[in-house]
Image (cartoon, rainbow, N blue to C red; front, side):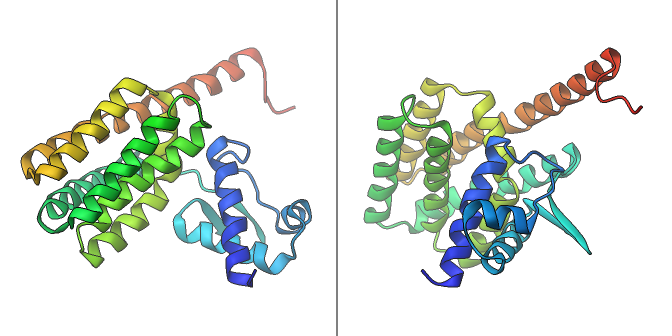
Length: 230
């Protein structure tokens, strides 16, 4: 394995720890400790942290350990609105430009999600769901759109996972995936935009509820004397 692929593999594992909450927002990521824990040298660990920093999941700090990013609710909502617009455009362009093979491959992803949903690990299902959306973007055959979408997907990876985990509804998700694929197969622009909009529309409400719950937990800790400075 090359240094680059090792760094990608380390970044993948750290990314999953961030999504699962094992590394919560604001938590330091100590290069030496994490390198020892994963049995790697500090060089690929350092590069993995840089990868996550480019994705917006980690914040680098001069002369201090990097920390897991902790964006504000307003920042996340702004990014979700941009992602929403990008995915609507990708659906429109995919209807125009996707090949039959690409549409079939997207259908295969839909079927795979349906097969493992409710049985596989929630994070594994989520990652497959993101592949489904990314495949539609790729089928738009617009490099600028794909690049921009990839950047926003990376920034919103944790927020999107929190939303998916919060409102886990097998019937709704599978129904919407089927509807999105059916609209794409028919190359029906209006239908696919409506279905993608419905699929993503609840994300802002889910994330806002998550932040409200976090604020409530903090207030509860203060009221009970937990985490109070001595």
